[in-house]
Image 1 (cartoon, one colour):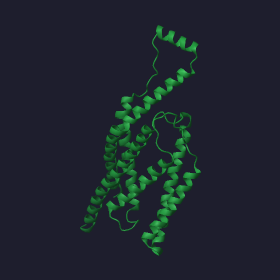
Image 2 (cartoon, one colour):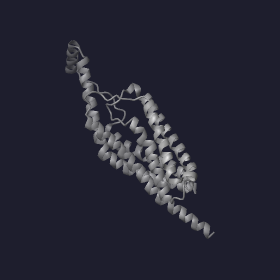
Image 3 (cartoon, one colour):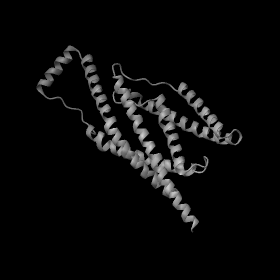
Image 4 (tube, one colour):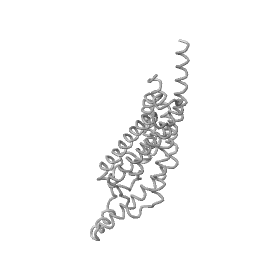
Length: 263
């Protein structure tokens, strides 16, 4: 059954990736193009500012005698926004769909008497909260031209630390809530587990260092739209995985129960 659920999870992830690709193509890529254009203008302004009059004259004379050599482009922008984006989002969706199916196989029946659809929806919401919302609150996504290339390793590490803390806090909160349910009831246990999660995340968000590398003059509207598009892509991905996998898992489990009953 785990193999069956894994295949269905990957199929749900592929469908989620296709929908997320469509959203990213329509709403995300235009913001990336605007950010790249801003970055080019910023680099051009810095080069003019740093160049002395003599250097500028030499550059002008050099441009008259021979064309400037363009910096080689390893992957074209067209490929990045097309095939590259499509491949990355679909593979990402399939991978997380498979992982989601494995988590579902472990959690189903252990978090109450929820149906497969309800269990899948609950797990997808928890994944979206732990993997996307919580880390993005501390370290939101940034478009090109935002962020120092020298600190990308540090920023990536901090983002991963926030994800690990978020997942660990959610797992412990769920365990606390399940143990408390027997004595204080399910509803109150949810509040206890939720309060623990919120406190841990609040402490982590305060203690972890902040990262603010938005350059002066970067359009606030562009930054906001890019971050909204990034959240939209993740929301579509996890919503689709949760709903589609819930349907597929319920059919598979129902079929197995019927097979076992008449075996």
